Image 1 (cartoon, rainbow, N blue to C red):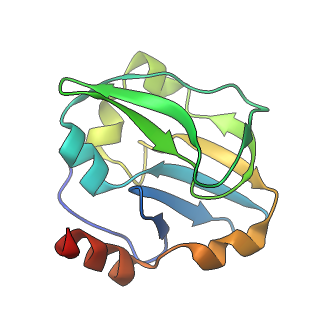
Image 2: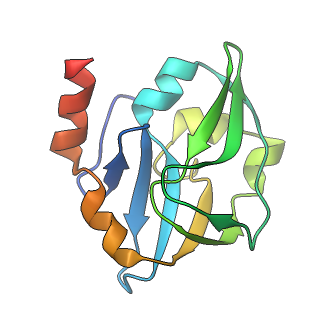
Image 3: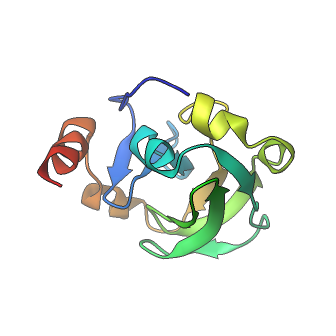
Length: 132
């Protein structure tokens, strides 16, 4: 498993998901945070959603299954899935080993880039973890 970290170049959703906004501001990559994968334990299954699926901010768009539980993955921003990390359906291990790198879940064309203002920076997200 990866060491605890919350990169400063990401934005975070309170439901333990992250978004990396591309330089164009119109697309983003999503995944689950270190905290989420650590709470789940070893992720053993990822059901990739289909490209073209519309996502709504704050709504589940897929599930990850661990040895402990099945957990919804919540969209941090709204948009349309343009790419899925298909490799994770064969081997979901990178979700634990590298949640911000090879463990990314989907790439999305954002429908409302202004929603990013509602997400948390790394320091604010980490503060929510110590408050719980």
